[in-house]
Length: 243
Image 1: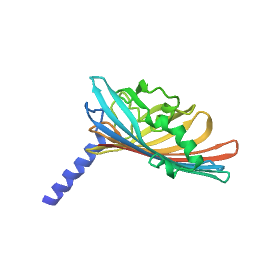
Image 2: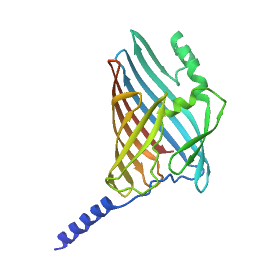
Image 3: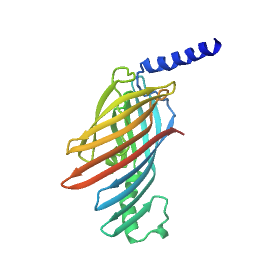
Image 4: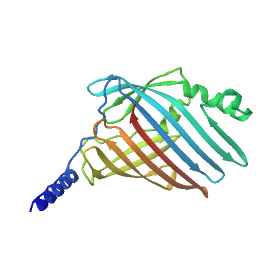
């Protein structure tokens, strides 16, 4: 009898989590530091590229409705191959390790990686640029590769869906999130979507959201597209952790 009661209590707990509604909101404090790590692989047939980026975020001010944060890249690496040409670079390489092509690429990336990005973020995850120090063109496009999830106004439960739109390199992605599971610590959702410039493109992925901080602690996304007869595949994984 005791085992049956225990089993029923466990079942009740599982069911209650499944029916629970959660209000997704950023909930960070002044002085909190988070590190975003992104790994992306792109195969466009004529060009193959692997990219890895690490960015640190410091919460400089926590207000009732929003936050002011400071972002800076701490690591960048890429491997590219196109038409027999290869490039292998990472920001930790020393000057004497670089060949002529790597030095040219390093000189292009250096000002982007040294730029500090000051943003204002509301509790839904929407962000506005405050300033760049120094002012460097192109750095926000690099940061957009690591875009966060924008949360809905209403609370969500298993089965709930919401949409948000992200713009990257001139393309507009409309992403749909569907909650698949809610636990004590996390909200899990599947991702699907489309790209306005590439009809027929398929976007699939998943996100894991930390209920305590509201940060999207893990995001996976696969994009499969075909443009003018050329197949393009992109796989990315983004993780965010407190440091």
